[in-house]
Image (cartoon, rainbow, N blue to C red; front, side):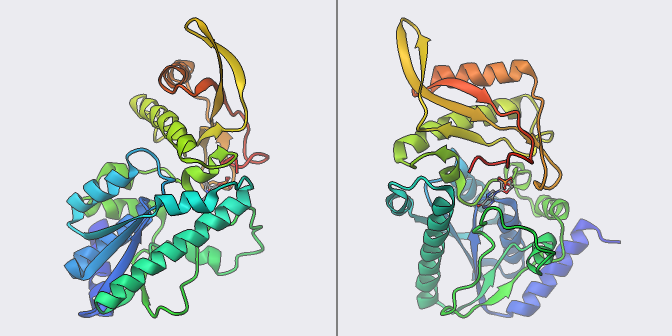
Length: 321
Ligand code: XMP
């Protein structure tokens, strides 16, 4: 009989055995898996764990604070934040192709993270790297029967050759729901433990067109409003995730107050799903849609139209890019 606390005890014992009196590094993404993996290792080896969080500037409103403030408050973990926002914007300048964006974001992310690892290694004897690999990831990367790689997912990456680390993967035997329970057992905040999926390339693949600082600000505001209203309506558990997408190269005419506007559309893409392989568009209540639409067009000056994506997957993917 696997209780959550016995999973925690067993993993803590294993981590202690593996790491001995060594030191470990863990990259945090803001997501559930890396947070729970880090919290387990922190429970096992305390301040011999250092976490690294890369702010690539493609995060949603409040996500950096969730890691820097809430996660640290819950675990007491050592955290280094690398502010790489400008570097990512520079690398993405002029790029509009979705796969190109993913490759650039993935490549820059690995470079920044490796540099942080090198800096830490130079400072102390860090021999272990923590990864939030789950059981389904293990099965998937074991070369399951020809699942087409429709979009390259950058967070299932290899290890750099020139940095020698032993991997610590305390979630390797667990499914997502078990990981959430372990996170709760370890005292992590609900906002982290129940977080819906969010892609590694972040808002970079939710701006259709070139990614710029101004466009990111627009999308962040619209996204925050949508999330706020969905949460207030108690719909978070019902929705798998709700990408909010900025059609940055599209403009439409509108009228607001006493003037004509010529702004950008925002797309709401609420989906219901079991595993993201297939998905259905979520039938959100009209009054919730109305609140989101009214608030976005009132509060985000650059946006004058909100549209709803009513496409299932297939044929549409969940993300627009
Ligand atoms: P799609 O758009 O392929 O998305 O239907 C399926 C799920 O995967 C997420 N997603 C990504 N996650 N890196 C990630 O870490 C990516 O490049 C990426 N692309 C899509 C998406 O949010 C959904 O949950």
